[in-house]
Amino acid sequence: MKKFAALLVAGSTIALATPAMAQSADENFVGPRVEALVGYDIVQAGSSVDDDGADNNDQSMDGVNYGIGLGYDFNIGGAVVGLEGEWTDSTAKTEFDDGDFEGFGFGRVDAGRDLYLGARVGTPIAPDVLLYAKGGYTNAKLNVLASDGTTELKQDFDLDGWRAGAGVEYAMNPNTFLKLEYRYSNYQKGEVDFDGDLPDSDRFDVDLDRHQVMAGVGMRF
Image 1 (cartoon, rainbow, N blue to C red):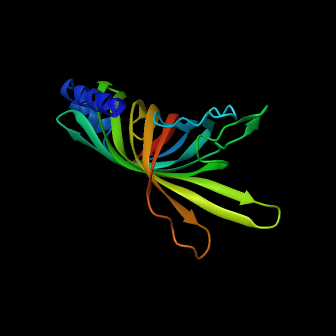
Image 2 (image 1 turned 60 degrees about the horizontal axis):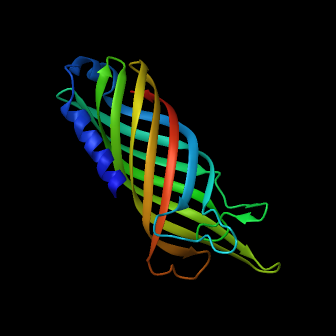
Image 3 (image 1 turned 45 degrees about the vertical axis):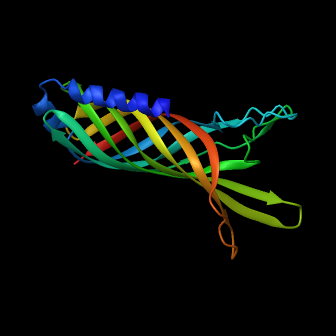
């Protein structure tokens, strides 16, 4: 929660420190946008989880995160405020590596799709450069496939949490941009989605952290 508060303070500072660049914001950072995203994704046990045990479990998995994003930005007195959403997936999965099992309390899984809905606030620090902070809701899945050699059991962990982050956007021209950002997500509630006719489980407490460094290229209309 301290990380979330720190990022919100950073976003507020950005908005209050907005220079007189309203015209550049209108030209380069306002209106609907669509973007392609790719980056590094690490999923790990949160601070309340200790799953080391006898297996020397390092409690993490990592991979490539990729997806698409949509958004709409407004100029409010020179500050840029926007709404945004994302669909991403990841190649991160648990593995055995020289006897070290990366399970972080969920067993053998791979990261599934991740949905995000949130907002951002920023300020142009140059006519073509926007510095921003962001935050919102995220829903992620961990995919599980278990087999005893005869029967397969497919199920997903469906996780709810919050996300906060910060980044920089560079306007190549009024219609094309590049961006780089860091995001932190924490998942605190989950349920098991069973494959087939079985009902979903009751919701339960979890503590799962996600760190991502993402790059994007997009178009503004």
